[in-house]
Length: 381
Ligand code: AOF
Ligand code: ZN
Image 1 (cartoon, protein in one colour):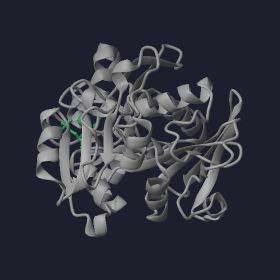
Image 2 (spheres, helix red, strand yellow):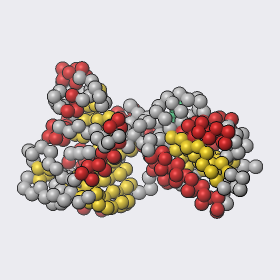
Image 3 (tube, helix red, strand yellow):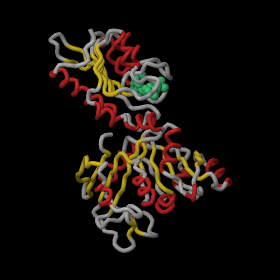
């Protein structure tokens, strides 16, 4: 018989294994777009009935094995009669890989514990139904909030045709993100720098406005030791295609993907020069010279981006915040003073207004060396 409500002891164990699957899958964020990073564990029992971890898997790069298949491979024969904990409903469709539901059935798994259902209309409940029809016990909704949070980028791409958005800002102790006409001003220390680079590595793409690209000439790569190959796609919002061919972004476009989102009326010769340098040019409507965040996000969602990190400057941050698309807001307050000529973090919007927004709740505060970090998260994601 199929049981869908576990006993209290079992549900406690279920929650713990699901949390472990979520932690495992977090390692894959930023590397598997347009797919979700899913985590799967195969848990067997020893002769005394104690659980033993027989296999662990995370989604491989697009076109390769899904999480369940990787976990089953590791478990081998030990999968027979075992439980599978998986953060997203196993797929039931023949995509680039065969259905994971079938692989679990064929391996003789007895029980499947699912974090959240797959919003993909090709799956959406069919994976769970297929497992139940084959006589497996199926439990859904275990640690559902954590699994949704893990897979929010994929969920937004499928349900809203746009990526999830993290907005990051670094501000001085006196409340500025830089100084007018001064290029890059060092706001935060090395610990906060490592944190930001780590964040970059778990996003699919990172976006700045052309103002920041011109003022700072940033590289926007992940430069943490061992994670150099984890740099996200770099995106510049650049209505008039002003990004210089000599900028670091363009001159490294052959190594790290660089995309420029520009208005339909941008100069053709400039666009061909950028394309020739290896930049992907994406043209969108820009009425009044402005590219709306929703328009940029749709263009990125169409190209498979599930997790976007927005890094400024002030007007880009304000427009993303005001359009209500931000899922996570990360504020680093550095232990420096900018003083005269300081640029406020949001053009025409105050941080007090951000903090007063009832749709967001604080989820983390702490210190990164001498800098303070505060993370706000959209409620009920
Ligand atoms: C799973 N396990 O690890 C992932 C799933 O093109 P394909 O064949 O790779 O299929 C991609 C779809 O599979 C994706 O849109 C989503 O619905 C599901 N992702 N499913 O069972 C996994 N990554
Ligand atoms: Zn699958």
